[in-house]
Image (cartoon, helix red, strand yellow):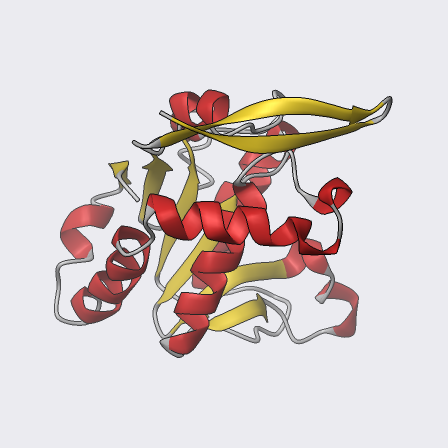
Length: 208
C-alpha cells in the first residue's frame, strides 16, 4: 500500500535510531507489501459464506492483512496496556506492540480519534496503574481522506488529516513521539456501494 506520513515530536528521526530502525523497517515492509490484489482477495473472501457478509469498506480486509503479517513477524496483537483487571477491555488495548513500538490501526469513529492518539502515550509513559507493556514510541495507521472516499469507508470515521488537526491542541498530553501514517487509495480499483437489502449495504470492487 502507498502511504504518506507525519512525524510528531521527531518520531521519523527517532525511528531511524539503532533501537528502533529494524522494527520500523519490519512494520513498513508489511504495509508496503500489501498489494491491491491482496486487498481485493481478502475483501471478496468475506462473501464466501454469502454475499451479505461482504463489508461496505475495505477496512476489515486491510486490518486482517496487517494483523496476519505483523503476527507472523512476532508482533503481539491486542496487547493490554495495564495488568489490572479493571483496565483490560478493548479501550485499554493496543492493536499491536513489539518491544519499543506500539501501533494503532485506526479506522473507527471520529469520536475516538483523541483516544487513539493517547493510547500509545499510556503505553509509553509510567503510570500509577501497573503496566503490562512498556513502549517508547507510537505509530497510528489510518486512512487518508481520499482513501476514505475511494475505499467505501463510513463517512463518520476519523481519518489522517483529522488526526493531524488533533496534534496541536493535544500537544501537552501527547508527550511521546508519534508517527501518523495515512494510507493512500488503491491504484487499480475502487469500492462501489451496493444496497443489498433495506438495511444492508456492501462494497463491490470495481476495477479502474
